[in-house]
Image (tube, rainbow, N blue to C red; front, side):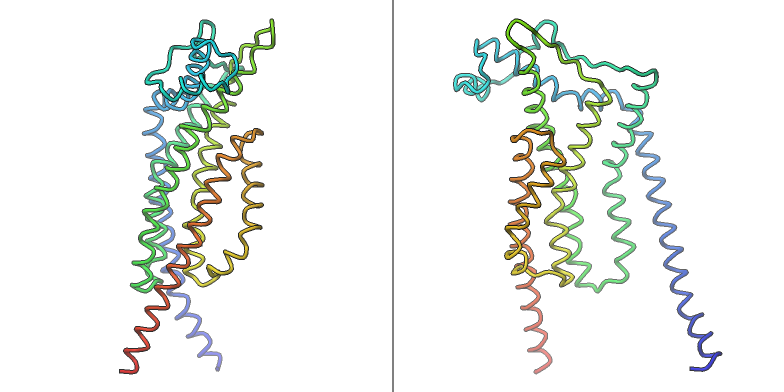
Length: 298
């Protein structure tokens, strides 16, 4: 190829690249505007959001009050468990254990509200961010691939909400209830008053960690759709995957076995579901290939 031909080829390839960069800039601009609007919207309702995030602490304190009401100091007493399962409303916290947090820095409460608003912005704009990502990559996909990709746009936020709900309704109340149970040391009583920034840091960290980890079926299905892994490979890797899952659970959860199992067991189940999803995709791909081969022969 001569020098003029080289220059012409470079110019032809440069034009699509510039078009993609311009489109990427537009998509990023929309994402940034959505995040800013989501931030201010969340900041306007930051107090109700803060109360919502503090509710697991209130549930834990109500369980402690129920424990005292039933007269069972052992939290694993069967009668206590029966009372918890049969309750409709929790009793109010015990005197001196009302819902209360502290701050130890001048701007700590304000910075906590900023973090909550940022967290709310990510949650609110998650569908917009996912849609912009899809719209950017969609032109490079075949129609069949776009139709196959669409269900994952729905599954991803649903799985994120499932992971966050597991933290909010089960894991956080249990961890806090377990912590409150350690306050009584014989004749000595230790009153736990959590620092607001530390409480919200661990709450948001767990919600994001569970929500992201619950994306496992989506990630593996997309990787399988791309042909990078097969269901047979995932099945043979199962033992190593279980070990990795428990390591991840140990890293992202508090150091107690119940919390770690609360993340590890669902992830193991999601890994098994991922294997079946990839297997189904392989079956559909093989069926389509056979149908395409039949059409060519005819």
